[in-house]
Amino acid sequence: MLEINARSDGSRGKEQRMEALSERLERACKVLRIEPQEGQMEASRVFLQELQRWNRAYNLAGRRADLEDLAGHFIDSIAPMMYGGLFCGQHEMLDLGSGAGFPGVPLMIMAGPLSMTLVEPVRKKQSFLRHIRRKLCLESMQILGLRSEEMARREEFLNGYDRIFMRAVADPFRAMKMSRPLLASSGILILYLGKEAGSSPESRKKEAERLGLKLEGLRSTRRLTGKDNYLALIRKKE
Image 1: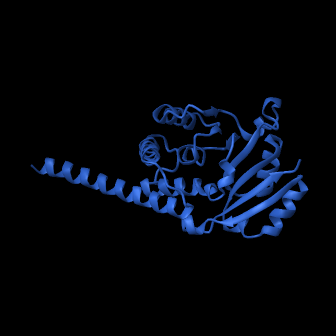
Image 2 (image 1 turned 180 degrees about the horizontal axis):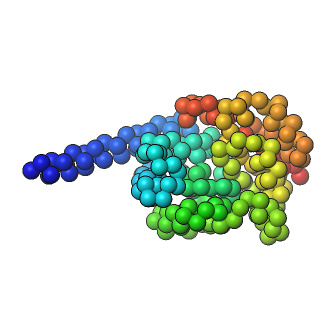
Image 3 (image 1 turned 30 degrees about the vertical axis):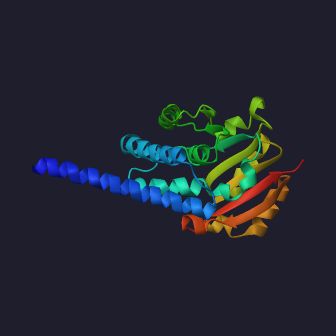
C-alpha cells in the first residue's frame, strides 16, 4: 500500500509541475501578445521533458538544471517574437551555437514553421537535437556539427542567412565579427545579451558600425524573463 501511495504521490507531483509549467508558458505568451495553439504548448512540454531526461544522463544544460530552469531558457529563447516582423516571409535562419537547442527549437515550436539550421559541434548535443527533430517532426530543422569559426571560412555558408540568432553572448563585438560573413545582405543578427553587455547602446552601436553593421534595436526582456537581459537587433548594411 505504501508503494502504491508513493507512486500516486509522484504522479500527482508530476502533473502539478506540468500544470505550473503550462501556466508559466501561457503567461509568457501573453506578454508577447501571441496566442499559442494547443499543439505548440504540447510540443513545448515534450521538448522540455525530453531535455530534462537527457540532461540527467548527458549534462546538456547543467546537471542541476530542473524543469523550471529549462522553462526559463525556453522563455528567454522566444524573446525575439516581440519583434513580429522578424518571422514574416520566407527566411533562412541560423542558430549559431545552439547547445541543447536554445533558442532554435523554442522558436521552431512557437514561431514556426521556419527554415532553421542549428549549429552545434558537441556530439551528444547533436544527438539530442536529432532526437527532438524526430520526436516533434521538425522536418525543416537542419543540424550542423561545425564550429562557428569553421562556418565563416566555408564558401557555401557565406551570405546565406537572413536571420542569425546567438544566445548568451558575453562578447558582442566578437559575435558580430563571427556572424557577419554568414549574414545575407540586409540580414539581421539577433544577440541575446546580459545586463553588462546590453546596458550600453552607444558601445554596441559603435562596434556594429566598425563592422559595416547597424544597431536597429536594443530592448530589455525583463518583463518577459524577469531578468536584466537584453535583445539586440543588428542589420547588415547593403
